Picture 1 (cartoon, helix red, strand yellow):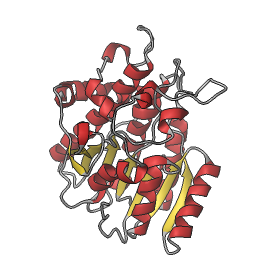
Picture 2 (cartoon, one colour; picture 1 turned 180 degrees about the horizontal axis):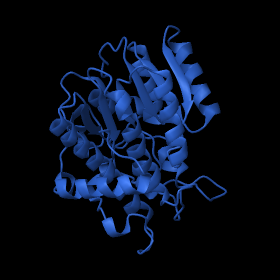
Picture 3 (cartoon, one colour; picture 1 turned 60 degrees about the horizontal axis):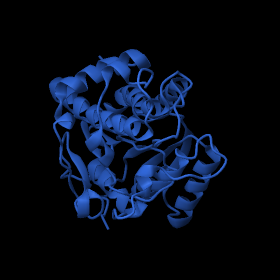
Length: 305
Protein backbone atom coordinates (compact mmCIF):
# COMPACT_ATOMS: atom_id res chain seq x y z
CA UNK A 1 0.00 0.00 0.00
CA UNK A 2 1.38 3.39 -1.03
CA UNK A 3 2.13 5.62 1.97
CA UNK A 4 1.07 9.21 1.26
CA UNK A 5 3.77 11.61 2.51
CA UNK A 6 2.87 14.03 5.28
CA UNK A 7 0.53 16.71 3.88
CA UNK A 8 0.03 18.80 7.01
CA UNK A 9 -0.86 22.38 6.15
CA UNK A 10 -1.76 21.63 2.52
CA UNK A 11 -5.23 21.98 0.99
CA UNK A 12 -6.52 19.64 -1.71
CA UNK A 13 -9.60 19.65 -3.92
CA UNK A 14 -10.67 16.17 -5.04
CA UNK A 15 -13.50 15.97 -7.57
CA UNK A 16 -15.75 12.94 -7.45
CA UNK A 17 -14.70 12.38 -3.84
CA UNK A 18 -17.85 10.59 -2.69
CA UNK A 19 -17.01 7.21 -4.28
CA UNK A 20 -14.39 5.09 -6.00
CA UNK A 21 -10.85 6.36 -6.43
CA UNK A 22 -11.84 9.90 -5.42
CA UNK A 23 -13.30 8.71 -2.13
CA UNK A 24 -10.16 6.66 -1.44
CA UNK A 25 -7.84 9.54 -2.33
CA UNK A 26 -9.77 11.99 -0.14
CA UNK A 27 -9.55 9.72 2.90
CA UNK A 28 -5.85 9.00 2.52
CA UNK A 29 -4.98 12.65 1.96
CA UNK A 30 -6.98 13.63 5.05
CA UNK A 31 -5.27 10.87 7.03
CA UNK A 32 -1.92 12.32 5.93
CA UNK A 33 -2.79 15.70 7.44
CA UNK A 34 -4.22 17.61 4.47
CA UNK A 35 -7.37 19.69 4.51
CA UNK A 36 -9.50 18.06 1.83
CA UNK A 37 -12.36 19.62 -0.09
CA UNK A 38 -14.64 16.83 -1.27
CA UNK A 39 -15.95 18.32 -4.51
CA UNK A 40 -19.10 16.35 -5.32
CA UNK A 41 -22.27 16.66 -7.36
CA UNK A 42 -24.59 15.07 -4.79
CA UNK A 43 -24.64 16.63 -1.32
CA UNK A 44 -26.13 13.59 0.42
CA UNK A 45 -23.46 11.25 -0.98
CA UNK A 46 -20.75 13.78 -0.16
CA UNK A 47 -21.94 14.10 3.43
CA UNK A 48 -21.97 10.31 3.79
CA UNK A 49 -18.39 10.05 2.51
CA UNK A 50 -17.29 12.84 4.83
CA UNK A 51 -18.91 11.16 7.83
CA UNK A 52 -17.12 7.90 7.01
CA UNK A 53 -13.77 9.67 6.70
CA UNK A 54 -14.23 11.49 10.01
CA UNK A 55 -15.34 8.30 11.74
CA UNK A 56 -12.15 6.58 10.63
CA UNK A 57 -9.94 9.62 11.27
CA UNK A 58 -11.50 11.82 13.97
CA UNK A 59 -8.76 14.45 13.71
CA UNK A 60 -9.07 14.78 9.92
CA UNK A 61 -9.86 18.13 8.32
CA UNK A 62 -12.30 17.91 5.43
CA UNK A 63 -15.42 19.53 4.02
CA UNK A 64 -17.99 18.97 1.29
CA UNK A 65 -18.59 21.47 -1.52
CA UNK A 66 -20.91 21.05 -4.47
CA UNK A 67 -19.77 21.20 -8.08
CA UNK A 68 -21.32 19.72 -11.20
CA UNK A 69 -18.69 19.39 -13.91
CA UNK A 70 -21.48 19.12 -16.48
CA UNK A 71 -22.39 22.75 -15.72
CA UNK A 72 -20.02 25.63 -16.44
CA UNK A 73 -22.10 27.85 -14.15
CA UNK A 74 -21.64 25.37 -11.30
CA UNK A 75 -17.90 25.21 -11.96
CA UNK A 76 -17.65 29.00 -11.82
CA UNK A 77 -19.71 29.23 -8.62
CA UNK A 78 -17.55 26.56 -6.96
CA UNK A 79 -14.29 28.24 -7.96
CA UNK A 80 -15.50 31.71 -7.00
CA UNK A 81 -16.55 30.52 -3.54
CA UNK A 82 -13.28 28.70 -3.00
CA UNK A 83 -11.38 31.83 -4.00
CA UNK A 84 -13.27 33.86 -1.41
CA UNK A 85 -12.78 31.33 1.37
CA UNK A 86 -9.20 30.08 0.91
CA UNK A 87 -5.92 32.03 0.87
CA UNK A 88 -4.42 29.46 -1.50
CA UNK A 89 -4.93 25.96 -2.89
CA UNK A 90 -2.08 23.45 -2.95
CA UNK A 91 -3.45 20.75 -5.23
CA UNK A 92 -6.35 19.96 -7.54
CA UNK A 93 -7.17 16.34 -8.34
CA UNK A 94 -9.32 16.18 -11.47
CA UNK A 95 -10.76 12.76 -10.75
CA UNK A 96 -14.52 12.81 -11.44
CA UNK A 97 -15.93 11.46 -14.68
CA UNK A 98 -18.63 9.52 -16.48
CA UNK A 99 -18.11 6.45 -18.64
CA UNK A 100 -19.95 5.15 -21.68
CA UNK A 101 -23.58 6.34 -21.50
CA UNK A 102 -25.54 4.16 -23.94
CA UNK A 103 -26.81 7.08 -26.02
CA UNK A 104 -25.66 10.61 -26.64
CA UNK A 105 -26.60 12.86 -23.73
CA UNK A 106 -25.75 16.56 -23.44
CA UNK A 107 -24.66 18.77 -20.57
CA UNK A 108 -26.67 21.87 -19.72
CA UNK A 109 -24.23 23.82 -21.91
CA UNK A 110 -24.91 21.61 -24.93
CA UNK A 111 -21.70 19.54 -24.83
CA UNK A 112 -21.71 15.77 -25.39
CA UNK A 113 -21.85 14.43 -21.84
CA UNK A 114 -18.50 12.62 -21.73
CA UNK A 115 -16.55 15.42 -23.41
CA UNK A 116 -18.33 17.95 -21.21
CA UNK A 117 -18.01 16.14 -17.87
CA UNK A 118 -14.64 14.45 -18.36
CA UNK A 119 -12.70 17.18 -20.16
CA UNK A 120 -14.39 20.56 -20.61
CA UNK A 121 -15.66 20.76 -17.02
CA UNK A 122 -12.28 19.87 -15.49
CA UNK A 123 -10.59 22.18 -18.01
CA UNK A 124 -12.77 25.11 -16.89
CA UNK A 125 -12.27 24.21 -13.22
CA UNK A 126 -8.50 24.08 -13.65
CA UNK A 127 -8.37 27.47 -15.36
CA UNK A 128 -10.62 29.07 -12.75
CA UNK A 129 -8.60 27.65 -9.85
CA UNK A 130 -5.17 28.45 -11.27
CA UNK A 131 -4.94 31.91 -9.62
CA UNK A 132 -5.61 30.25 -6.24
CA UNK A 133 -3.17 27.43 -6.99
CA UNK A 134 -0.44 29.88 -7.94
CA UNK A 135 -0.70 31.42 -4.47
CA UNK A 136 0.79 28.16 -3.17
CA UNK A 137 4.60 27.77 -3.20
CA UNK A 138 4.41 24.25 -4.66
CA UNK A 139 1.02 23.68 -6.32
CA UNK A 140 0.05 20.60 -8.29
CA UNK A 141 -2.72 19.68 -10.72
CA UNK A 142 -3.18 15.94 -11.23
CA UNK A 143 -5.66 14.85 -13.88
CA UNK A 144 -7.07 11.34 -14.06
CA UNK A 145 -6.91 9.78 -17.50
CA UNK A 146 -7.63 6.14 -18.37
CA UNK A 147 -6.08 3.18 -20.10
CA UNK A 148 -8.72 3.81 -22.76
CA UNK A 149 -6.75 6.91 -23.74
CA UNK A 150 -4.45 4.51 -25.59
CA UNK A 151 -7.14 3.99 -28.24
CA UNK A 152 -8.51 7.54 -28.17
CA UNK A 153 -8.60 9.89 -31.15
CA UNK A 154 -9.08 13.65 -30.91
CA UNK A 155 -11.52 14.80 -33.59
CA UNK A 156 -11.20 18.56 -33.39
CA UNK A 157 -13.85 18.97 -36.09
CA UNK A 158 -16.39 16.84 -34.17
CA UNK A 159 -15.60 16.81 -30.45
CA UNK A 160 -19.31 16.69 -29.61
CA UNK A 161 -20.28 13.72 -31.82
CA UNK A 162 -22.80 15.63 -33.90
CA UNK A 163 -21.42 14.60 -37.32
CA UNK A 164 -20.58 10.99 -36.64
CA UNK A 165 -22.65 8.20 -35.15
CA UNK A 166 -22.18 8.32 -31.39
CA UNK A 167 -20.04 5.56 -29.88
CA UNK A 168 -20.04 5.23 -26.06
CA UNK A 169 -16.56 3.70 -25.91
CA UNK A 170 -14.88 5.87 -28.56
CA UNK A 171 -16.35 8.99 -26.98
CA UNK A 172 -15.01 7.93 -23.59
CA UNK A 173 -11.59 7.18 -25.06
CA UNK A 174 -11.48 10.61 -26.73
CA UNK A 175 -12.38 12.40 -23.49
CA UNK A 176 -9.69 10.58 -21.50
CA UNK A 177 -7.03 11.23 -24.14
CA UNK A 178 -8.10 14.87 -23.92
CA UNK A 179 -7.51 14.75 -20.15
CA UNK A 180 -3.96 13.53 -20.67
CA UNK A 181 -3.32 16.24 -23.26
CA UNK A 182 -4.67 18.81 -20.78
CA UNK A 183 -2.12 17.72 -18.19
CA UNK A 184 0.75 17.74 -20.66
CA UNK A 185 -0.11 21.14 -22.19
CA UNK A 186 -0.52 22.75 -18.77
CA UNK A 187 2.88 21.36 -17.84
CA UNK A 188 4.46 23.02 -20.87
CA UNK A 189 2.72 26.33 -20.16
CA UNK A 190 3.89 26.22 -16.55
CA UNK A 191 7.50 25.70 -17.64
CA UNK A 192 7.31 28.46 -20.25
CA UNK A 193 5.90 30.96 -17.74
CA UNK A 194 8.18 29.99 -14.89
CA UNK A 195 5.33 28.95 -12.63
CA UNK A 196 6.05 26.67 -9.64
CA UNK A 197 3.06 24.56 -10.70
CA UNK A 198 3.48 20.83 -11.42
CA UNK A 199 0.93 19.35 -13.81
CA UNK A 200 0.84 15.60 -14.31
CA UNK A 201 -1.58 12.74 -14.96
CA UNK A 202 -2.47 9.26 -13.79
CA UNK A 203 -4.71 6.36 -14.69
CA UNK A 204 -6.21 3.73 -12.37
CA UNK A 205 -5.79 0.64 -14.52
CA UNK A 206 -8.88 -1.55 -14.33
CA UNK A 207 -10.36 -0.54 -10.99
CA UNK A 208 -13.79 -1.86 -10.03
CA UNK A 209 -15.97 1.12 -9.08
CA UNK A 210 -19.45 2.42 -9.85
CA UNK A 211 -17.91 4.15 -12.89
CA UNK A 212 -18.61 0.96 -14.85
CA UNK A 213 -22.35 1.09 -14.09
CA UNK A 214 -23.37 4.71 -13.47
CA UNK A 215 -22.86 5.96 -17.02
CA UNK A 216 -24.03 2.76 -18.70
CA UNK A 217 -27.28 2.90 -16.72
CA UNK A 218 -28.23 6.45 -17.72
CA UNK A 219 -31.69 6.55 -19.30
CA UNK A 220 -32.38 2.94 -18.34
CA UNK A 221 -34.69 1.51 -15.70
CA UNK A 222 -32.26 -1.21 -14.62
CA UNK A 223 -28.56 -1.24 -13.83
CA UNK A 224 -26.27 -1.92 -16.78
CA UNK A 225 -22.51 -2.38 -16.96
CA UNK A 226 -20.35 -0.70 -19.58
CA UNK A 227 -18.80 -2.99 -22.21
CA UNK A 228 -15.45 -1.64 -20.98
CA UNK A 229 -16.23 -3.13 -17.58
CA UNK A 230 -17.32 -6.54 -18.90
CA UNK A 231 -13.95 -7.76 -20.20
CA UNK A 232 -13.85 -11.30 -18.77
CA UNK A 233 -10.14 -12.09 -18.59
CA UNK A 234 -8.69 -8.69 -17.74
CA UNK A 235 -7.16 -8.42 -14.24
CA UNK A 236 -8.78 -5.86 -11.98
CA UNK A 237 -8.29 -4.22 -8.60
CA UNK A 238 -10.19 -2.25 -5.97
CA UNK A 239 -10.20 1.52 -5.26
CA UNK A 240 -7.42 1.41 -2.61
CA UNK A 241 -5.05 0.20 -5.34
CA UNK A 242 -6.64 2.17 -8.18
CA UNK A 243 -6.23 5.50 -6.36
CA UNK A 244 -2.50 5.04 -5.82
CA UNK A 245 -1.21 6.36 -9.18
CA UNK A 246 -3.21 9.56 -8.64
CA UNK A 247 -2.00 9.87 -5.05
CA UNK A 248 1.60 9.36 -6.14
CA UNK A 249 1.29 11.98 -8.88
CA UNK A 250 -0.35 14.47 -6.52
CA UNK A 251 1.93 14.09 -3.50
CA UNK A 252 5.15 12.19 -4.05
CA UNK A 253 8.48 14.08 -4.15
CA UNK A 254 9.60 11.79 -6.98
CA UNK A 255 6.62 12.55 -9.24
CA UNK A 256 7.80 14.32 -12.38
CA UNK A 257 6.57 17.46 -14.08
CA UNK A 258 4.41 16.29 -16.97
CA UNK A 259 4.64 12.68 -15.76
CA UNK A 260 2.03 10.01 -16.39
CA UNK A 261 1.55 7.21 -13.84
CA UNK A 262 -0.42 3.99 -13.66
CA UNK A 263 -0.27 0.39 -12.47
CA UNK A 264 2.91 -1.39 -13.51
CA UNK A 265 1.63 -4.96 -13.33
CA UNK A 266 -0.16 -7.21 -15.81
CA UNK A 267 -1.29 -5.36 -18.95
CA UNK A 268 -0.88 -2.09 -17.05
CA UNK A 269 -4.19 -2.89 -15.34
CA UNK A 270 -3.08 -3.77 -11.80
CA UNK A 271 -0.06 -3.56 -9.56
CA UNK A 272 2.18 -0.97 -7.94
CA UNK A 273 2.48 2.51 -9.42
CA UNK A 274 5.01 3.20 -12.12
CA UNK A 275 5.48 5.43 -15.18
CA UNK A 276 2.85 4.77 -17.85
CA UNK A 277 3.79 4.61 -21.52
CA UNK A 278 2.78 7.32 -23.98
CA UNK A 279 1.85 6.51 -27.56
CA UNK A 280 2.25 8.92 -30.45
CA UNK A 281 -1.18 10.54 -30.03
CA UNK A 282 -0.50 11.14 -26.35
CA UNK A 283 2.73 12.96 -27.24
CA UNK A 284 1.10 15.12 -29.93
CA UNK A 285 1.86 18.59 -28.58
CA UNK A 286 0.31 20.34 -31.58
CA UNK A 287 -3.04 18.62 -31.07
CA UNK A 288 -2.86 19.37 -27.34
CA UNK A 289 -2.38 23.07 -28.07
CA UNK A 290 -5.20 23.12 -30.64
CA UNK A 291 -7.53 21.32 -28.25
CA UNK A 292 -6.65 23.76 -25.47
CA UNK A 293 -7.51 26.72 -27.71
CA UNK A 294 -10.86 25.17 -28.69
CA UNK A 295 -11.66 24.40 -25.05
CA UNK A 296 -10.93 27.99 -24.05
CA UNK A 297 -13.51 29.18 -26.60
CA UNK A 298 -16.09 26.57 -25.60
CA UNK A 299 -15.81 27.20 -21.85
CA UNK A 300 -15.11 30.92 -21.85
CA UNK A 301 -12.13 30.37 -19.56
CA UNK A 302 -8.44 31.12 -20.05
CA UNK A 303 -5.10 30.90 -18.32
CA UNK A 304 -4.35 33.71 -15.86
CA UNK A 305 -2.25 36.53 -17.27
